[in-house]
Length: 399
Image (cartoon, rainbow, N blue to C red; front, side):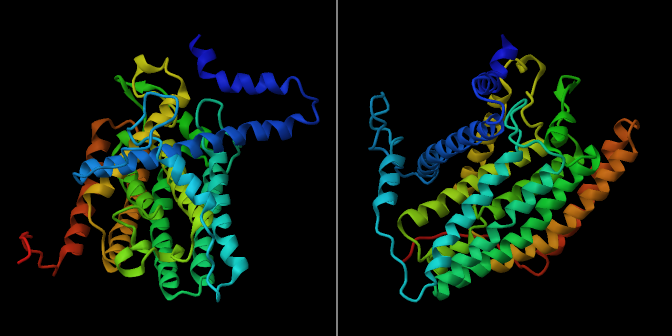
């Protein structure tokens, strides 16, 4: 019963393919894998926007959406149907294009953003036997395809013929390139120890339990450090607060998509959220055991439920961070990436190698690896804070 529930969607797909000629099965199999992914994560995008607005309202002591309910349900006036009029407005709103804009590139930019983001889902193991394309270079494919997002950001800023859009695009590209380095380096530690770029192999390497705890990489010194750096870099790559410099409204209005409206703006909005889900999904695969359960007595829960639960937990953490931390300055953003994140990621590579070669030494390698991470963390942190002269911040009402 447990196995059949876990493999429900896989078995349904194979059952449907059994009615088709053998020549059509590969094409239909791809469609049956892709369409549900797009539908599920597209629906998740709509729901998360509501949770984010309501969550930020709670954090900031104000009302979130609280009027539009979901038809034919008991959720009448809770605001959880707000995404419906928002979507309708985006579809019917006038598409305004600047007179001097490069209209072809202006049109293609949101499409170029969305397509690579959707392709990254092909290598994410959503559940047991639930990877669309499970090939040997899955992690490499994820990062290679995801790099195309920077091209779309430049296309949007340059084609708009607007200085604010162009400055926003330059900021966005500088930020993405800077934080892509620690993002990839933190993933390399996992690849080194697993010895494979295949996402299913990485998940399989974290199977099982030791003393009642899962064998997830995040529960090791190098894995915890790598996971924290991966999360920080993921926030920056997704343009999430406190790293939302490309669209700092007080300086650059809406950044590289200032001159976008209607459905094109909605595509940028959708692409950013889907990109955030994808990069969180990769972090779950690399450090949090993928679809594996956290405790032995919970292995009866379907694997895809665990993957989505972990994803939602990190999404809510991102919402909490957005409602809590103020936006950084551009110099702080770049300094943090190049003077702290990248050196720490390189050091973590060495720590992962030490962990591997000290296998079998018991608690000794925990102590050694923890000290190898803590020492540079303190030294680099002090280096960043030198000559800052930060005093106690006081708040008062304006006269």
